[in-house]
Image 1 (cartoon, rainbow, N blue to C red):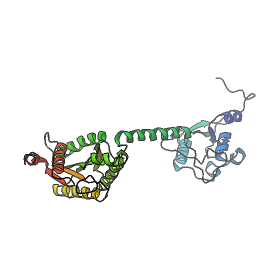
Image 2 (image 1 turned 45 degrees about the vertical axis):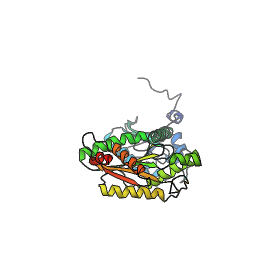
Image 3 (image 1 turned 180 degrees about the vertical axis):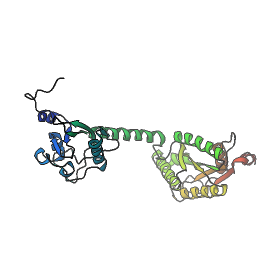
Image 4 (image 1 turned 60 degrees about the vertical axis):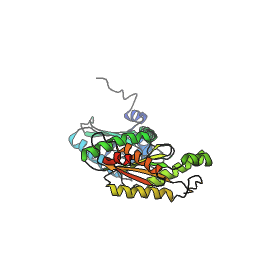
Length: 325
């Protein structure tokens, strides 16, 4: 078996040339090796570390998990790996050469292995790798993924849910209402006389009005199960489970008032002289091929036909009768 020619290289020469931290402790936890990498990132030089207890050499605490792993390796002679995913900063090590309380600990990946000295002593080799770059890359990728996810599900103008997200959520909400036999309320909302507003005030003002209306609608929601989405153009849709019909009607009026109270001037809005909305509501327990969205849209059509700035509520099972009137 080949061995290192100690006439050419000493243990210190090799351990100090490696770009990772190396610590060797004996069975009592006394430090036998402390390489330059550890000295640099701990701020503790080799002379001050050797022959001291590892638990006493650092001025800051080591993680309990690390201490337990070290004890287990010394006792049971089994290797342990502390991955960065679960144990990010076990030792008080820093990327800067001078440490202080304001700095953040280096992210570390640590391997603890049992070794036997040439004097037949049971020792422990601790290898420490700087994982800061991989953690930063992971955070960057996660952040990028979250941005892409948000862009895929959020309307860029209003920052509420977009049509794509609504379509997927609506299918799930209807299926859930059918399975659990609970009420589902769908609100279709349209900004009244919006084309006239855009033509008179301009598209920039029109976009701002859409944003303000979206925010007013969103502020009325208080349950995690409720969503508001931009359905298209100046149209919005709300999905709210577990609402009785009477409560849904009261909420529709609340939505109407919230937008009315914004008092956004609109001289071409008939008698109102401000931006208003029309709301169509459909409430019921979906069965078979029932489509609450279509019936909420029919209710919205009635609200606009009857003068706008109001809501019309149609029970899911009776919508066709209403349409015939």
